[in-house]
Image (cartoon, rainbow over the protein chains, first blue to last red):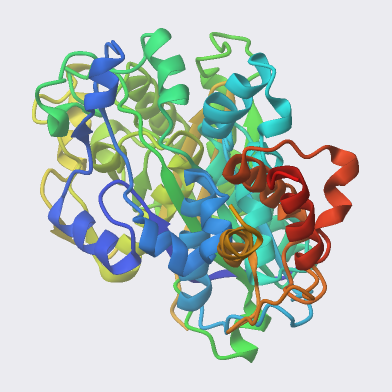
Length: 422
Length: 82
């Protein structure tokens, strides 16, 4: 069985659209959440969100003029993060007429992929009887796999190129799927992660469900409040996080820089039983997922010294902390360090897990933890955890980290990283 | 629009779709084979031509656009009064 390491990363998030910028934004605790005039004009109850900004010129630089014209934001986010990840991994960009790279696969998940294209182009044209006028790119832009397909073509990938979709667990699940591909020898490298459009159409469904906060429209950067007594709902966002997973043998053979080792991970479902539902997690399955991820990673609970939580700023936060405490067998006051990257970048939905995995690895390799914003009024039911949650950036060396992600459909994904000592 | 004007407009219309460096477009150029236009985008050239010259091009007539000169002849026949 191959060992799996991370040799490159790329990020497009609401508070930075490159890796070094993201590291700085994390260090500074800089929020990427802003007021949305469009949401206000459309009568959303929640009028704040996190939108990554990729300019037309940057999109054209990465995708080329023709593809840039024929792409949506999910594709652009996926391509920018993937190409940056590819370069960060020290791999050469191949010519468009070269043969495929048979040794590299891509698993780039999404929750809603081409939602914008369907809502803005395909739906209106179809119901107006103008199908003939849709144009050539409607099909490729509407696909759930629009991001992975676009990346696969630009980078000339010859391994499996696919898209997974498990709601808010998507990004972390993609990494775990990629981990197993390499572990079992089915691929040398996997570009793994996810991309999500910052789509008002996706956000509308969350607004309708009353899970997006509506109490902080005048204070966008205070809106996302994980672990806070006054948390009132998630803040929608989008973006992309991509990590280059690689077999240790391949990485060492090409003398690649290694960020961390992926020790293992686990995905499961709660069957929408025992308190689980389409929107809520079965606590038993969450605890099983955490324990099984430790088992796969051959890691003891006491070895975990940092948790990048799913932590959305909803009532689920307290439940998550209770599950973590039970699964690790550690009281709240004895928990590892815990922070919530969503407090800075909102809930990237399908992209949440992968953006947060990039944040996790950046913190581990740079010896710091980012502040968990907006939890000054810590939730009293988990009060003893408060000293374990940094409220300002702190220097600390975390050696082994657990990343948790949970999604609608009662699905769970947990992954464990360890610093690479060479 | 006379033929020269149609030619100029059509050349400009197809330029963004041409995928060779420093392209030299002539009436004898084949859109896909010579100018390396992505065949998937062929339908977009048809739609833009319809919009620009206010004509309708049936699916059966799309093969008239394989060669640049033939396309210009076709547009002329549809737009220039006899």
